[in-house]
Image 1 (tube, rainbow, N blue to C red):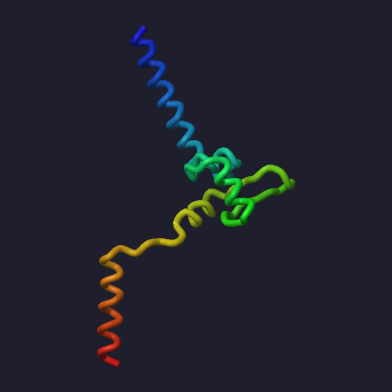
Image 2: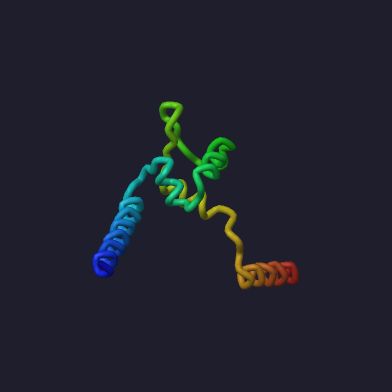
Length: 100
């Protein structure tokens, strides 16, 4: 019995990985796929769409769709600089102000 359970668990893992790969192949995601892709709850994604904080499409006024590339851009907004990048920027401005 334990062997059958192990096989079923492995099959479930494989199915999950296949679903993830299929999601990465799609250009347009439906609402549930977007929730999975963004790793957010349905209520949070509804809030983001209703407040127009995330790009989406609503072709017939009911169902929501998302362009995966636009979601990637949205996810990468508000990038935080590393300490090294900030230090480099400060040094560049200091050396520029000394020359001027």
